[in-house]
Amino acid sequence: MHAMHTREAIEIVPPRAAADEAVLTAPALAFVEDLVRRFRPRIDDLLRARRARQARFDAGERPAFLPETFDVRTSAWRVAPIPHDLRDRRVEITGPVDRKTVINALNSGAQVYMADFEDATSPTWRNLIDGQRNLQDAVRRTIRYRAADSGKTYELGPQPATLMVRPRGLHLPERHLIVDGRPAPASLVDFGLFFFHNARVLVEGGSGPYFYVPKLESHLEARLWNDLFVRAQEAAGLPRGTIRATVLVETLPAAFEMDEILYELREHSAGLNCGRWDYIFSYIKTLRADPRCVLPDRSQITMNKGFLRSYARELIETCHRRGAHAIGGMAAHIPSRHDAAANDAAFASVRADKEREARDGHDGTWVAHPALVPVAREVFDRHMPGPNQIHVTLARCRTKAADLLATPTGSRTRAGLRLNIRVGIRYLAAWIDGVGCVPLDNLMEDAATAEISRAQVWQWLRHGAMLDDGTSVTRSLVVRLIDEEMQRIHDEKGDAPSGAGSFSAARAIFEGLCCDDTLHDFLTLSAYDLLEKGTSHACC
Image (cartoon, rainbow, N blue to C red; front, side, top):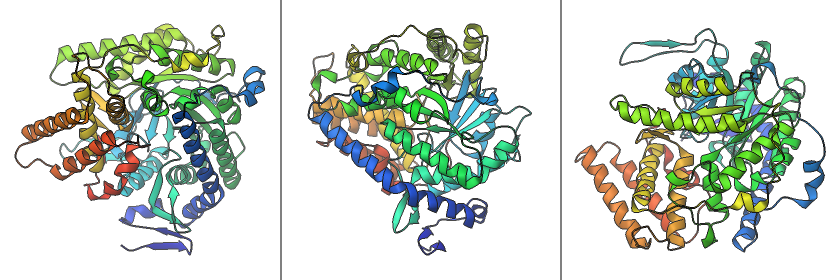
C-alpha cells in the first residue's frame, strides 16, 4: 500500500482514482484534520460512556428520564424557525450515494432525499469517495449518468428534492484516513468532506447544509454534534444556525432524552425521526440481559404495539411542543415486476402505515423506493393540507418509562427464525461485496434490518426462547437452519455461485455473532476487516 501525505500527521491509504482529487483536496483534508483533532477525544469519551451505561443495564438498571434535566423537559422553549425548503417534508426518500440512485432519488417527486453514507452504503473507500463526488455534482446540478447496458442518460429534473445527508455514526472508524496514527472517526470524515465542498454552494442556491444524525444515545452526544456544527460554520464564515440537522431517535436510551436532544441542537434542529428498525435493534441490545424482554418475530413488531407505539407518540408530542418536525418511519417495500398481487399487498400495507402516521400527527414519512412516493404523498396530502402539522399539539401523553419499555406480545416461529438467518447472511454477503442495500423478498434490507436479524437470533438463543411449535431455540437448531439456508443459496446460484467466498465469510460472521456469549455492538464493526476483499461496487 502507498500513502499520500497532506501533512505529516494525516495520510490517506488508497485505492485511489484520478477523480478523487476533486474530493480529497488539501484544504478539505486540513478541515477534516482539524475536526478530528478537536472532537475525537470527546467521541472517545462518549463511546466509553456508552459502554459504561450498557454495563449498568446488563446489571439490571433500566433506562429512565434524567432527573438532572427535569427543567429542560418542563420549561418553555422552542427550536429555531424552520428554513423555507424544509417546511414541507411530507415524503422523504432515502438511499445510497451511487450516481444513478442520487439522480433518481432527487427526481423521485419526494420533498427530501436523504443521501445515506450509513446504513444503506457499504463503506468501501470507493463507495464513499465516489458518493462525495456524486453529491458535489448534484449540489451544482451538473450530475449525469449514462447506463452502460441501455445507453439511457439520467440527469436532474427542474425541481429536485431538498438534499439531506446522513454521515456514519460516532462508533464507526474510517481506516483509509489516518490522523495522528489512528483511523479518523467516520462521522467526521463524511460530515467534513460534504460540508467543506458544498455548504456555501447550497447557501448561495437558497438552501443549506442539512443533515441526519444517526444512532445518538444521549443529549451529550447531541451537544458534541452541536459544537461540531458551530466549529464548521465558524471555519466557513457562515452564521450559526445555517446547518440544520434531524436526529434519528433509533436507540432506546435516546427515547428518554428527546427533549434534551432537541434542546442541545435547538439553533440547528430540524426535528426528530422515528428510526424504527434501528430502534428495535437497540431495544434488544439495551435489554439483552433480561429474559422478560425477548421479542416475537420481527414481522409482528409493528408500530401500533408496545414500546414502538409509545415511542412514536412521545416523539410527535415532544417535537410539536418545541416547534420541530416529527418525521415518521421507513416503508421498506419495493415493487415486484412480476407479481401484481404482491404489489397490491405491499402498497396496501404501506398505505395503512402512512395513514397511522399522518393521523397521529407526523409531519412526513420515509420511503425506500420511488414507486412508493405517490402512495405516501396521497395519504399525507389528504390528512395534511398544510406544509406540516407542527401546529397540532397532542394532549400531553405523560409517557412513563414503563411505556417505552413495554415488550410487545406475539409468537416466535421457526419461519421467523429462518427469515432472520436468511436476511442476515444474504445481507452480510452483499455488504462484504460493497453493496449496502439489498432487495430481499420484496423488501429493501439495509444494515439496520440485518442488525435486528442477528440480534434477535442471539436473543432467542441466549434466553432459550420457545417457538410456537414447542421447540426451544438452541445452538444446534440455529446451526442446522444456517446449513439449510446456505444449501438454499447454493441451489439457487448453482455449483459455482458468484460471490461464494462472500457467502462463506458472511456465514462465519453471522454464526459467530449469533452464537457468541456476548452480543456484539454492531455487525458492521465485526465485518469491517473483510470489506475491501469484496468487489467494492456501488449498491442498488
